[in-house]
Image (cartoon, rainbow, N blue to C red):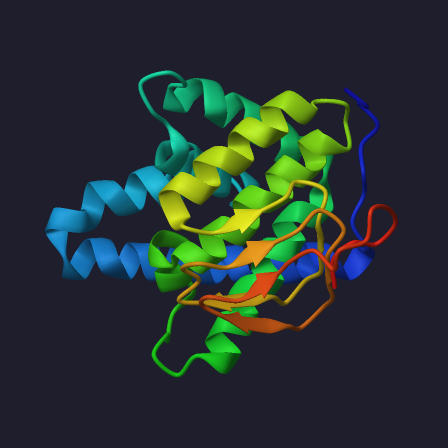
Length: 204
């Protein structure tokens, strides 16, 4: 694996910290208002020091199965967040995009804990990191589990910008050479599929 640390732009740290602070505040409120979810809020948010660690925990538990336990996936996912600061920043921007565009969502915590479109994008970011660090086999495994769990199929090589929202998400397919730029919203059932070319950019 390429162990060089990939730094995010300077403003990313402020965005990520602001979203993380909001998440912690909302998690504490949830714990107080709904005791049955207090341990859930603690496990997913309050016990972690930063957004990347919380995402690694949540996503690894979503994808875990009898073959690949959550702890093994957590260590793999945390490595990706540790080596790529921009991944947590991208997640923060994705959360902010959902809050801005979906009137049914009023808290960052709702996005982090419950929205599978958001989860699918963040899992793809991990698969993309692995794909470009010479770990294509495990990237394809993560893609497969993402598809099984979320109903969203994104090739690990596909490029996705920040501030992206998959609304409802079920049935979204994104091909290998597809590019989704910043500040894009995609509804369920959309396919960015092949154009029929044999090489080059084969997807829109």
